[in-house]
Amino acid sequence: LFAKQSQDPPAVKGLTLATKVRKTMSSRVHEAVKAIALCHNVTPVYESNGVTDQAEAERHYEDSCRVYQASSPDEVALVQWTESVGLTLVGRDQSSVQLRTPGGHILNFTILQIFPFTYESKRMGIIVRDESTGEITFYMKGADVVMAGIVQYNDWLEEECGNMAREGLRVLVVAKKSLTEEQYQDFEARYVQAKLSVHDRSLKVATVIESLEMEMELLCLTGVEDQLQADVRPTLETLRNAGIKVWMLTGDKLETATCTAKNAHLVTRTQDIHIFRLVTNRGEAHLELNAFRRKHDCALVISGDSLEVCLKYYEYEFMELACQCPAVVCCRCAPTQKAQIVRLLQERTGKLTCAVGDGGNDVSMIQEADCGVGVEGKEGKQASLAADFSITQFKHLGRLLMVHGRNSYKRSAALSQFVIHRSLCISTMQAVFSSVFYFASVPLYQGFLIIGYSTIYTMFPVFSLVLDKDVKSEVAMLYPELYKDLLKGRPLSYKTFLIWVLISIYQGSIIMYGALLLFESEFVHIVAISFTSLILTELLMVALTIQTWHWLMIVAELLSLSCYIASLVFLHEFIDVYFIATLSFLWKVTVITLVSCLPLYVLKYLRRRFSPPSYSKLTS
Image 1 (tube, rainbow, N blue to C red):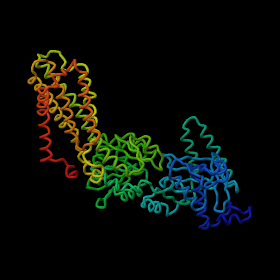
Image 2: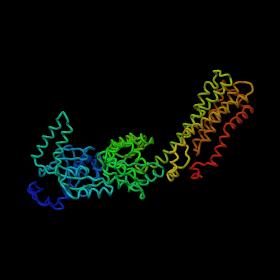
Image 3: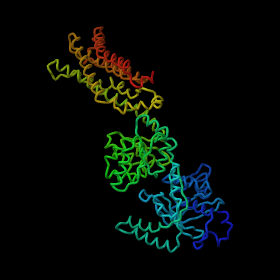
Image 4: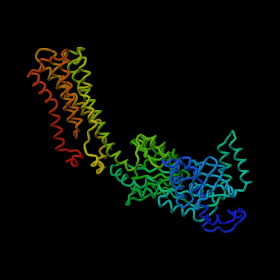
């Protein structure tokens, strides 16, 4: 078509508004591609590649140096498609757009007005003037739900939108409207007047724009595939096997969301899907909820409008039913609705929530959740910057939870309880010591001893517990069922806390009473025996807690023991240096340490023998 136009004389180039001839298929395709190439917010940027100067590349529109920049990757994808079929966006600034035809000719368009996309309007528009013909055209693209009432009546729009949505594509409807100079001048006068209004400015501006959005000519539909669909399936399988329920909150239309849920195996083949009918009032919501209540083990698909009505009148009943579903898909969700759903899940279930998103419209949801994960990809970095954790691909979410999340929880549980044990043990010894001496306010350990116990003598082994892991990373990924143990809260509970409290009281009492029974003449001997036994007990308890040894753990144990032995030279005012070199000191410390630690080692062996943990078969 462009080749034919270039051969025509300038007098008849282009189509005038007066001619009402039936358009051929090639001209329809030409108008559709031109609309897609013009109606967007993409800007081509030229970067120097080391050989070509940047200014020269921009002047000659060199393809190798051109990079498209836009707020949405969907916009870039559409412009790249028009380039692949021959109509290339080569230049753009605030007032003009340049397109290059397959024959190499440059088409210049003046931008008269731009109406940017908003989540409320769900569409964007642009008014341009063709410099070669002087024609003024209003192009618009948006979601099918809003564009259906704007374009001229046709009998195929709804059906084709449904077909593309069932393929898992994001659908946009593209339309145009030709304007005369008088029509545009009238619109511009009213538009400027509305923007100068002091009261209800937004409403007046929207009203003026809507006056232009009538009886537009439908050009085409565009469909863009979401980048997350490719690597979602194995990750969702992992999460489901780990006992984690997944809700999908999306702005796509119902058919697209349902197709995505099936392709990603969010809904298994054996599960039924209940599509919640569109409701607008309390009575309809009540009837639909009763119909949904009679279904069992089926996934729920609900639109944002119906969800809003249900939460307004039947919030408790809806959340109770939805939480029993194996999977929930909420389509046509606004960003505020996504955050509201996360908040309701936290309040109604009392469970921890993890929100995963890759776009700017997911930021509110990510910040509302207990744990936010941002996927850094073609949607930009807004989500990853607002999140607690940032990943480059969705499939990394499985490893983040199954490996790093599981290890972090178990390590934090062990470390926190061991710190309590370390402090409670010495507190029990002080309490026993004071009770024996008629509750006299005499400290058992003074000066550097009490400081050294909390720092260089026990700090390195205790904090080396953060390197511990019960199974290898590959095993944790292969058996996500191991994650279910964490959902029961067994590593950190009232039961485990009380067990550590009893261990601390037992060991503190044994060490203190043993030192009091075995010391001979001087008080300083009690300090030497009990403190040495305490340090050895802590080091042995760390060894008892460790599941898999790391070389740094061994270094920490030896380093702490070496620091204590080396510091004895400088602690002569607290400990009798000559006494600790005798055989009497060694056997007394050995007996007390064995009595305090040996029963716990026996109990651990018996428990592993008769009640092994779930991961023991995988590590053997």
